[in-house]
Image (cartoon, rainbow, N blue to C red):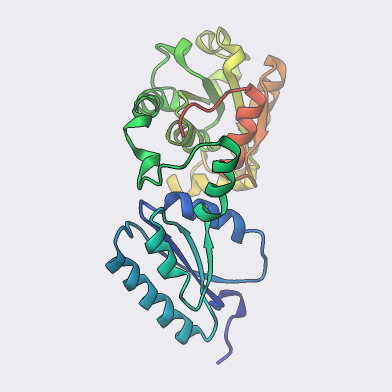
Length: 280
């Protein structure tokens, strides 16, 4: 039986952290995405905050090296020097993000690092955490045009046809950056009126539109309402055309989300609307 080479696992990647591992995972994905033609098996091990847990990691790395016949890749954000040193003794390519950046920063800032585990999520960031929670609550209360109240407090208002990516983008902006993002679906009634609702027009400077290809939109809508007029390609094409004409007429800045990730959409939006990120 032939093997599908496109799905064959070629390298095992360990993402090891003394915290949640989210930071290490984000950095790992950014780096590994630069290399095409290589398949990875990812193993994330969070909360490695003791020598015993580190030794368990060492054993798992060794087992992977034996099984794969090639050294695994280890990406870590371990603060404790003793624990980090144990990983460097393994048969693996170890990329220690903290070791790579802390020393140069100490030299540049003239201040020694606290080397405190979990510092990213400590009480020093309580104000940012509170802002993030407030942003999430605001975004959920203003999803899909549910409410037009307090839109003056929104950082951005996303508009576009139903299922064009407004809700996931809004939630990502709230979760990742602490931004209050409202969103409003453009519907046939709006197109018949030939203008945006007054509640949106008064906040024109906060508007940002999302569009999408008719084929992609139809595929997404089919999952929600199979074989419906709502999901038909012809209807999707008409709605998209009307929405784009309206956004051009109203001077709303917009982006095609068809081939864009949520991260790309958010970055473009923030740059276009000139929003500074609030939470880290």
